[in-house]
Image (cartoon, rainbow, N blue to C red; front, top):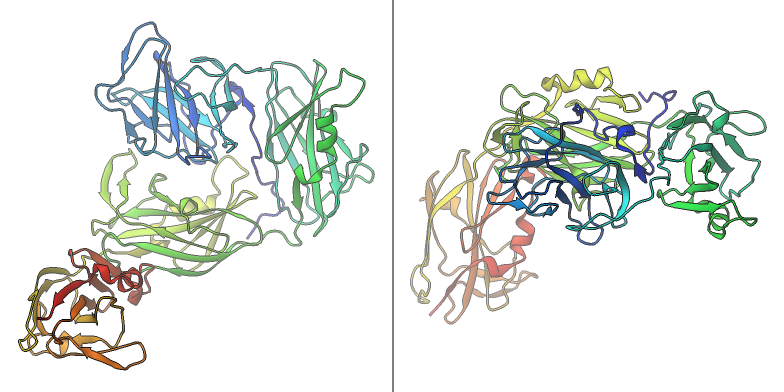
Length: 596
């Protein structure tokens, strides 16, 4: 299903972006016309601070008067409505700054690039910018001069202070190419650049194999191409001698870009977007550029694959058809030929669900995200309509329809329907692939589940200090939407209690067991150790007895701690939620009585 002949995208670096040359990094967003700015504007943006891992946004007041920004909105999309609302009573002094940081800032700016908008209290856009991929090195995306164009990526962070001055003759570079092309296909590298100087050369130097080396003759001159302009060029990766495609199956190609300007400077760009300058007006080459050219581990690479990249395989998708409200999750296990950069779930709400881009959960934001698996929680998420209004919550009991999207580093996106069929979206074009549009518009092809209420324990009474000869009745009252099939007590003895499966009493074996309650007598119950040896009874004088209640339905088990908090195991219904192991291993959470 992979379209091997179509060039895919990979954004490698953006160092200085002139706003007029910059387009949105977020697929499917409708980019608005640049708004007529108010006196308060977006000024500096941090996506994932490498120290704090927190996003922040700085606003700047361009006027000579204080401005009240109560109710202004910030959002991680082109429309500010539905985003973070600036608290009442907030003002910005004349030529002053306002910074809001997570967790107060309730939106998250993708480190891969995202739209950011500022709206006034009426929800009208007063400033908007498409934020490029973060360099993740402590630098920010901000205006070169406070309140003015252009915007610059890779600025020193100046949170709440005047932005650092930047030399705008230093060129931009956006590098797009397919990191895993099909063997023998044409590989093109799209270069986009911007500088107030004149670009006289845009070239690619390359090396082949596992031990590539710099060879000045292995170069491709972009300025010889008809597409060469002062804003960009597309360079086809061809062998400098034979003219053959540089896409041999299994052969690694390493390369870098060199831009030369009319001011005598050359700039080299490494795989992480770092810029190396070479002042060629002197007789000797710059030491830094020599070091860079001699170290191909710093270059960009791709390796062609025979037959092209296959779709990722989801070997296991685990979720409950009837998860407990507040405990919904999907467990994914997958594999792919190349790196997975995104594993996300998009969801719809109710009996007439529809695709809304904002109704999504980013699995790659989870600590569990790896190249082989991720668990994506779907509990307590706000659900938006097409206008950005909140229409419900993912845990309020309505039916949830959802699908998985996995994206690879070559730009391919794959959608998976409820029957495991795979739909490819080639993101190297500006609009979605027709098949994926059709899929997103047909929720009957998506997976579904409907959350249920947990069993509620309304009474749990027992004697704190029973004698060794009296009954120890635990009186339990409960209610639930499903049939209750088990109500059991698990217990342990002594000051260092531990969970032993055999130390239990089955309330459903008692004549008092009903769908609304049961009384369980804990008098004279044998207690065994891990080897099955008897260590006493639950009525031994002077002993502390720790115990907890477990209630089970056909699809879930519920554990209740001494404070009434709930722990859920939905794995009975092939769910991805199981909190029971941690609960059972922590007797400090259990109830206690002491035998007199």
